[in-house]
Image (cartoon, rainbow, N blue to C red; front, side, top):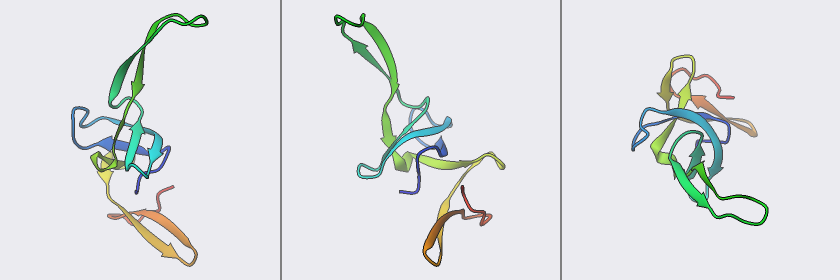
Length: 101
């Protein structure tokens, strides 16, 4: 999976198409990511002794194939490639060749 936590991504398909946000959680085993402000779901929490009842709005996971890395300089979605230099393996922008973080 080419997307990691704290990356800025843009949604390329689905009901939230075009939205950008920061990756809050990456789940490579399920090939899913949780993006801030995308796929917001409503959860109803029952009242307990310590807390009152409330309606929570939380982000649900979406498939990693539905997002692409976002480049702030060009303001476009970019494709990611890997370059291995010795023991290190870094992510690079396919078009420009710049190293990503």
